[in-house]
Image 1 (cartoon, helix red, strand yellow):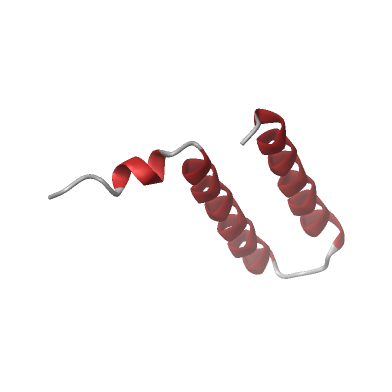
Image 2 (image 1 turned 90 degrees about the vertical axis):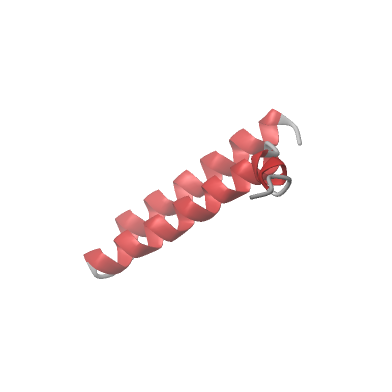
Length: 61
């Protein structure tokens, strides 16, 4: 996946989080949970894109 696509996805997620936090009236705790969930999903996606999750599946205990 091209690095430009990754940067665009990160920017879009950042802008969406900013819009949600700035303009949508919601309880502060719900916004915090929503932000945490979106950031966790983004980090997992980035780990998958860079192949870190694939290499972890090969580890045997």
